[in-house]
Image (cartoon, rainbow, N blue to C red; front, side, top):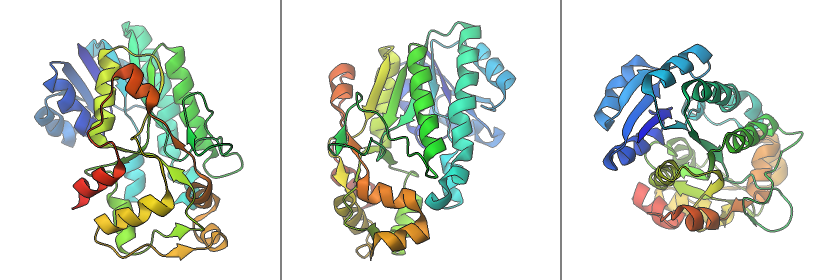
Length: 310
């Protein structure tokens, strides 16, 4: 199968390309930087420079690859993290990724239609952003939290846009949990080691995690099976911050995290950080395991954090 990966040099793309190549697929992967074409070649892909926000650039790249499936992995999260996390101003911090999840999505869908590409798989998001009502663990049938009135509102709208447009096009939206693995959590670990990543309130908010290799393997299955619909791509153990954050600190060789009351965290880091740490909802992976036949290398973040950091 010919597979086109938009965003091949990101943390997921770097794990996804080799998995697809190893299973016999012909992969074309994009980068925004000519300097990274050699990396894509080493991973086994045909590299192409593409600007996901330039409709003509996307159309040329897709037409040249003649793929059977397009995989949308374009984000600017690594760029955002390089400038350090800013949840207090998440609207500004994540603005480039919002554009790639909306304008970039539109450009890929238009290019797919023009080139006759029948299938698309897109990266979505399911970490702590389940609707803040009812139980702590949500399925694909539960709505995502719109986070209205917060700095996360635009970002959450972009996630829903990816889901809606992908399903409308007959593709698969893969809602990745909090990604960890090589290069994915370096900024968080740095803050933890500096004791600048505190527990907020009782740390009762839930999150769901997934290792990069498991996110990539789920994507391979969705590509090969030409899957449709929305899937939560998370591990088996959604957990409150009061459990995963101290354990991540332990694995990182850091002191236990400090504890901040909600009023202080709200003042320093903003409302989104408080909601995430105290009211966040995690996700179930039952549908992905059942319908994709997905098997995780790291069923729990407990195994994955330890393997990644020790």
